[in-house]
Image (cartoon, rainbow, N blue to C red; front, side, top):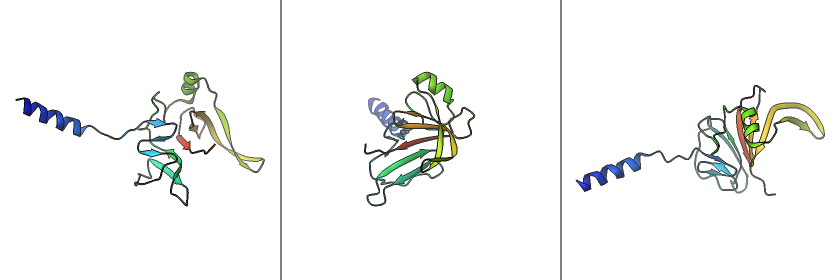
Amino acid sequence: MKKVLLMIFIICVSCVEKDDKTITSNGVGSFKLGEKLIEDYDKEVFEIKTSKKENVITTIVIKSDEFKTKEGFGIGSKINDIEQNIGISKKEMGLNKGKTTIGTIGNGLLYKNIWFIDMDKDNIVDVVWLTYSTD
């Protein structure tokens, strides 16, 4: 009987989904900023930019609401809720050419190296963006 229960336990543990869907300041799931891109990814879910020479991940754009920070923030979250929860104000994100602003891409809020972007200014996060910095 103990062997049967042990087998059931092992089967259950092995069936648990292992994909980490947590957004952190340095990555999401198995994709980490500053590390080499070594696996394929779903282009409907992510846009991943790498350095040309070393294939190191420099930018991750998350386009799916399946991924959230440990606080529960991600695509579909309300920008105002994030502002109130973390105490950081959103900013209008300008599109610049040199010193001249030529447009805007919406409102953004930067928290722990994670940009939450509301592109159509409807108070809902449309894109989550992580960028690697050597600073």
